[in-house]
Length: 253
Image 1: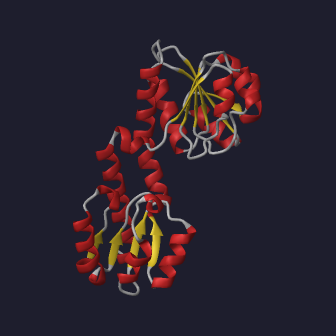
Image 2: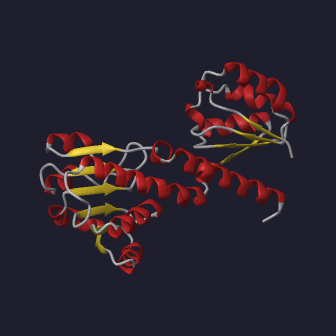
């Protein structure tokens, strides 16, 4: 199998991009595209139009418009960012990056701090257990009973999301991982004034940022932490994920 790796046109290396398009794509069985694909600045219609029919293209955060372009070109487009193992891999640098932000922004240690973590998916789990290991008193707010049971199994406190407003007054630090509007104006009003809020959820996040500012809280929307805090680790995680996709295709795993 032959491969072509296409970089974002935002890198400024247009000569390399043009050479890749003209020389490598027509022969490539597999094309590795950037993350996020939609914001890469690549001429996707022209690029995939040069690929041979039946080629496999791997991209990150693939949109429906990109899929339409790929279908028209006879190219199979797979979203590596949707792979669950990449989510788990990325949860580790995301958690460490979030802890770095908390240490930078707080005037007290995390040891002994009462921290509320919203959500107990891969990122919430990775973060909560690491905060607890640093001595923080971590409470997890989660919708599903099984998530709360898993949090308690790790020695953490857990409350239902429906009890968020009632529980909020006990925390001066909150981290959200839920991509839904959970930190509403009513919940934010119940937090102590000056609370530090770090929202890790994808855009638009789960925080009413305007209400947070109005109420005197510090609310940060911290996105893409793996590439910001640990770019080499993030790259390795992506490489392992792409390798797993290709091995599945070739029947070697």
